Structure formats: C-alpha cells, structure tokens
Image 1 (cartoon, helix red, strand yellow):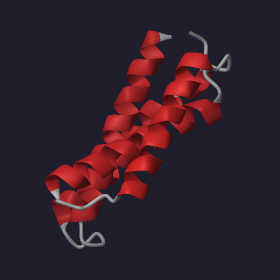
Image 2 (cartoon, rainbow, N blue to C red; image 1 turned 30 degrees about the vertical axis):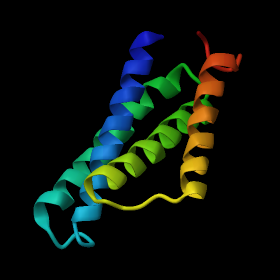
Image 3 (cartoon, rainbow, N blue to C red; image 1 turned 180 degrees about the horizontal axis):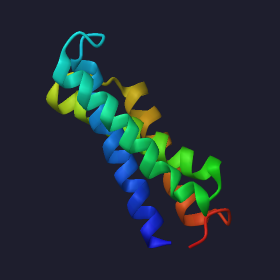
Image 4 (tube, helix red, strand yellow; image 1 turned 135 degrees about the horizontal axis):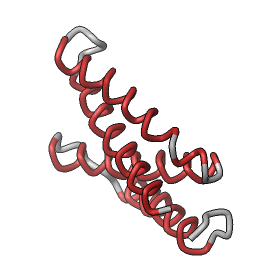
Length: 111
C-alpha cells in the first residue's frame, strides 16, 4: 500500500507543478509553461491511475484534489503574494482536516 501512496504523492506533485505552470502560460500563449502544464497533467493522471487500482476512486480523488488545492493555495500565497482572508484559510483548513479524517479514520482506506 505504501507504493500506492508514493504514486499518489507523485500525482499530487505533478498536478501542483502543472497548475502553477498553467497560471504562467497566459492561456497557452507561452510555450514553456504550456508544455510544463500539459506534461505535468499527463504525469499526474498517469500516477493517479495506479492507486485507483487498489483504493476507492472517491477516496483517491478526495486526497489528490484536496491536497492539490491546499498546496496550490500555499504556493500562490508565498510566491505570488496572493492574499488569503480568514474564510479562505478556514476553508483550506477544513479541506486539510477532511483529508486527515479520511486517512486516519476511514475504513474505506486500507491501512
């Protein structure tokens, strides 16, 4: 099962890189960030397909999308100085809490 979590982590990292590049691609008018986004999403879906073989699809997707949202928001806050108000921070905390609850308490995830 650890191998599948590593692949899920790689999917999350690839998606975060792709989304960061997508923001810099100017609607796919800049070649390098556009290519990084395209290949990053392709890698993310490839890595994501492996955990889905052995874990419930909804659980895999919840972890992948939840962690992606939190990480992208953190990158935008640190690197691009995008502000996060209290409701945004609370919402991100709820997402992160949901991911933790799924991983720690759900019987849908084999531990």
